[in-house]
Length: 361
Length: 266
Image 1: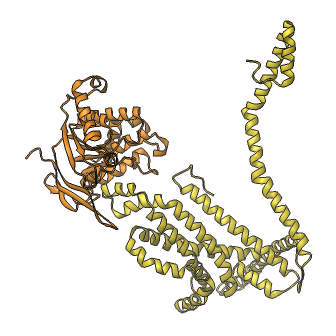
Image 2 (image 1 turned 30 degrees about the vertical axis):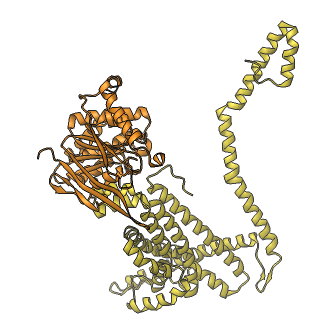
Image 3 (image 1 turned 90 degrees about the vertical axis):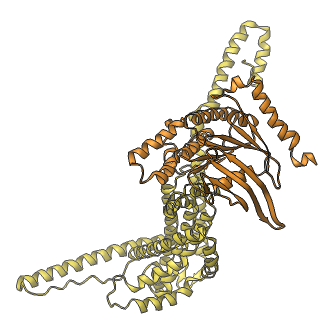
């Protein structure tokens, strides 16, 4: 038994020990000890686990970090070579300074706002003290929106547009997936409208919304409606198409079950169609949200609707020495938000999915 | 007539193909009485499943028709419950919920909530699945899934239980267990059962009659063998029973001598 995994030197010892039986016992005791050691080394599950964890850390953290660092280096070196009308292209450190500046700007604006309301309150209190019947006006603060306010506006707009798109697209996809006739009727329309650029929709949407929303003080600002509707029109299609495919691919055995049980339409959709098509629907929703986010920035930029797109456009028009850096901050933030939105959808899918073992990426 | 529970008359089906209609079944005539266990046996591709699907209402016969208790069958319905070959449980529902889907559909309005609950549990107990009522189909074995499939079908209280190779995908031991369960259930409930199989032992062990089908195209009933063995049947005792072995060899002879696979004949 001892001779199974002997190293050459140990084997030699064994051979030598044949001549000296006393030695043999000592050596074999040693080898078995050594063997136990190797077995321990090889099979210790904790060590193995640690090794796997280490590999996972390297793969998921270290390598991406190296990638990002390399990118920053290339950016830093590359940017300093490019002379523009607004000075040298900013590198990572200048962009970080700009980001810091934007945070500072936001804080200052908040302070100004607080001060404005404080003054207003004092003034009104004074007025009321002099004359209790005096009419007190409360004016809202009208400072220009900061970078972070623009982000919030953009997020609210994209979510509104995306929700609206989902509310339309999922039922439409389910109907198209279940009825071949309706699919045949809808398919050409879907194929034609799907590739239309947001920039083509925007003028149409602007004119129609302006015509429909006539109230001088609408519940929602016109610009917001225009951006949201444009997002809806462009992000509708992936969800419609994916839902249609998902629904039409339901296992025919499950449909037979529903036929034998004579399930009514709503029960069939709720118990069989939706859970079956859920992975495909989520695939569509994620594509839609990604498209919606891209479209929104373009729409805001072109239509001068408040949001991140307008921020970029304003900085472009501004043309100060800070502008390039600020635009780069916006680019990175837009990318990060897009990434977070997608991760959010993935989390939601994990929560909703019935198959907890499914690998989602 | 009392014994005319389910009647198939001149059932013929043509499937459209690029080269014109393909006749899969030709003039099937069969009469099944209440409480009878009938097996359909034949080589694969002979149209056994098509016969079952026509009885289930999932396919429509081109000519002829099916009459159940004096009413023509032309759409699927719970009075002709189907146990599918690959269990067809909804993977996102627990075993309990899978049975519940059927029970809610059929007994809502006639049974109270408590009665429905008891009825679901009762049916899961019949197939010995009470221990796993909150498990998802992915968490139980193939044999267990098929048990739940049978429970779901039984819970519909069907007039006829249609089973499409219910144990075909299971290993031999699991299959034997389920066959015993099925015999036990049928002894207790006296269901009318039509089962498709390609397992000769299974057919002889379970059936009152074995319907042997010829090979397609235009498959039809070749012979019908009545199996007169006393209930309850025990597989171990029957293994040495000359009568059982006679039935067995009858079916084998039909399948491998008179109606061997077409390519082997040619």
